[in-house]
Every structure is written in C-alpha cells, then in structure tokens.
Length: 144
Image 1 (cartoon, helix red, strand yellow):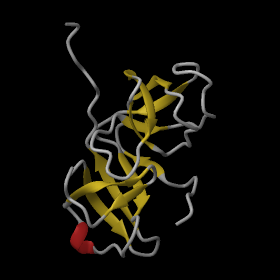
Image 2: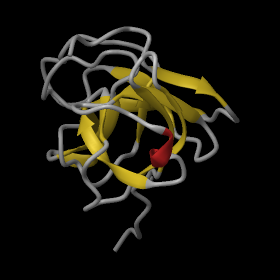
Image 3: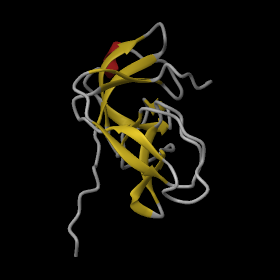
C-alpha cells in the first residue's frame, strides 16, 4: 500500500496546536502521531500497534537533528473525522460503529481490536478506506 498525501483530516470541528517533534524521523501531513520516547512534549509518527495517539500531523517536516528542533501543527480535536486506508483486507459496511487499532502512521488495522482507539464512522469501499474518529490522549499530567 503506497502512502498518499490524500489521507488524513476530512471534516468536523478542528483544534490545531503546535507540537515539538522528536528526532525519530520525518513526519508527513496526515500521519497519526504518538508520544516520542524522549519525553511527553515531543511527537513522532505512530506505528502499527501504537496504543496512544496524541494527534494527527497537519503539515510535513524533515527529521529534526535533535528533539524539539522543529515543531508542526497537530490536529487534536475529538470531533474531527479522518480518512485512512485499511492496512490489509477489504472494508465493508459491517465496520461502521466498530472500534479498532492503528495499522501504521497512515493506515487502520481493521482486523485488530486490542487498543480500540479508532472508531469507524463510515467506509469508502471504492478507496478501501474508513472515515474514523481517533481517541486522542493529550498527555495531561500533574507537575509532581
């Protein structure tokens, strides 16, 4: 499956913030993001099995030389709807209102339900994609 610039935000209430990028690799607009291991304040591309999402990249950037050298705009609204392809298999209307897992930085694992951080709103059988809401964890924590 080739990545396409066309995956990502589709509609819904938008809430965009700027986040620092960890030096774990380049980020492409539409990538689902998780916390970087270097600290909660940095974001990185989500990978298959990511169980905590903090947002979706709204712009692309090269890999920074050091953690925090670059920042990007990130969509964090729980009301936003995104479109992503299935990482494998074929989508069907039976997926609507089901929860599932992240398949990769720009794909959904329509056969896994361990983390349940993706909720299917609709499907596009022509593109073999799902319209989804993502359950973001914003990383709020106390100072002590």
